[in-house]
Image 1: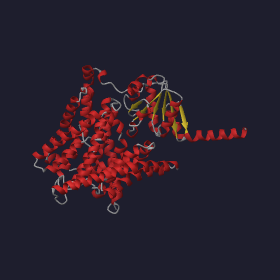
Image 2: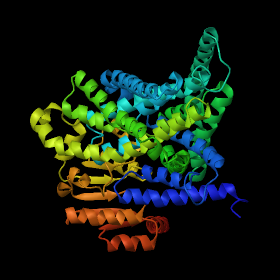
Image 3: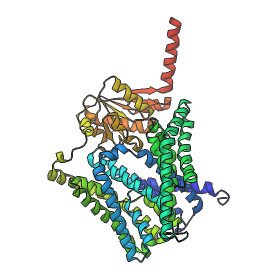
Image 4: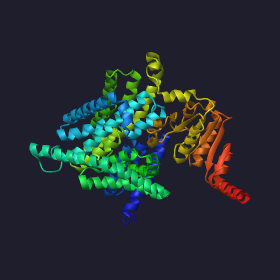
Length: 554
């Protein structure tokens, strides 16, 4: 039966196993990404039991790559990069060069050709966006100067990796991969043609795409159909990715990245990100599972020294290089340690580079296995590096003085709030609530952990506490004891009930206001201590009846 429906079997198998191992990883306080990779290993051909269709998994993974790169484009903020350009740009470039040379040196010792060594070194040089943002959010570091440097550093890395993904296929034969061996003149000509195509594509996106994408979204949003709007976002991501390949010969990844970047400048970008996030998450999970399916665990037994050396480059080599570079730029030790810990892992781009290198015949299978092993173990170790950093914090504060690297004004505003309202959630409803509070000159701050929303919030001037409201210390950072009210503008009644109970433990006298979509949800929220429950349909019905009665009275 499974043989007759390989696509369904592959999708279901990947999602179910990813859920099981992702939940287990989360239970063990590890990133779910580890669970997804392990799920792929379990479903892969190198372990006993059911083996998912590898070819179909790779096709699904391509969609995952497109949506991942689309998400990177949505995160891209030129203003954030400009703010820390003096350290992020040269620091990231130098760190990538040194890390690539370290990887090249290891492959030289193993007797690999230079082309293989360059791909291998590049894959070890770029950190995971998901892991870095998660680590910074958990420690409320995104709105600090060092957090901004780390994010800017990562943006530069992502841009360089995008350029690498464009140039590597063009240079495949030169690097020892599939294709005809070219002369120097042919190589130069090929590079020039490739770069011209990229420039043409960028110009097309900045001239046509910058006008067409917002225009399309505005027209679809005007229809009022949420389903159609979500579909339009997905069509833009996939359509521009595929179209860029056919028209300009650039990669799916570059097309999706620019589609996301252009979309990020639209006023509807946050809604677009919110609508596309579930599908992006699902296909991203399928991408990580498909990568895990390629990993042969026996490499840990066959080549333990090579695995250890790879991990050493990622965790120690990159960290030391980043640490020295940040100190050389005159930043405090706390900033240097934070950035070095943030970058001591590899993730999405490493997998994309490994997959591309293998497909082009440049990277050997052992290289892919070493990259995957290094990624898995470095992601597992990354939280422990941050815990070590937490232990060093008192010593660093005493050594440097907290004033030497203060948080941004945002953190100070949050700490000084009194008699304020805490708004949780900044979706469509949350924005309306924020606008009303600002219009009435009411003091409030926002609690938000959505990565697609975080970049644009500072532009609004709203004080923000970054993180999930249920996480340890988040509501305390929002000064909940001094707050008079908390508004939960989130659609999930189960999460809202947990947050109400958590808020009441910290401040029993606080007023809690929450929405409900049904009578059952309203009762559930009231049972957990909600002061006011706004039942959307019931309250709309009351308003409609009251207006009709007013019309009869006139």
